[in-house]
Image (cartoon, rainbow, N blue to C red; front, side, top):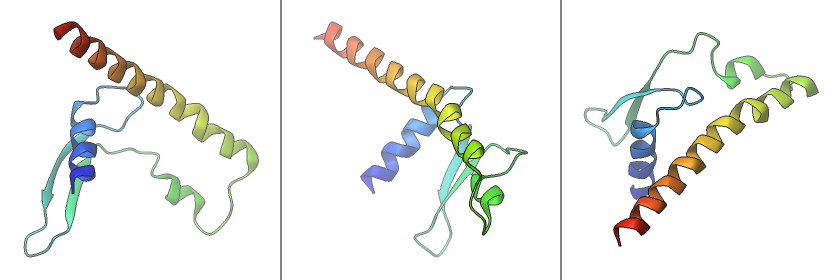
Length: 89
């Protein structure tokens, strides 16, 4: 449960143009299922595009190329948070 809370916290704080915007989350009534609302992405998910067939090699290269800026943004934010903690001590 702690991992899910950390992920939701990260999503809620993210302001990167490379990360899908988090809108909210809630527990589904009468169950332990968690629903997470994210912004609508007109292009659909990767799963929508893959279906039952494998992706061609050039399409596989797009994923890492597009996720690298999001990872870099995340790392930079964590470094900045670490610097603020060090300066406060």
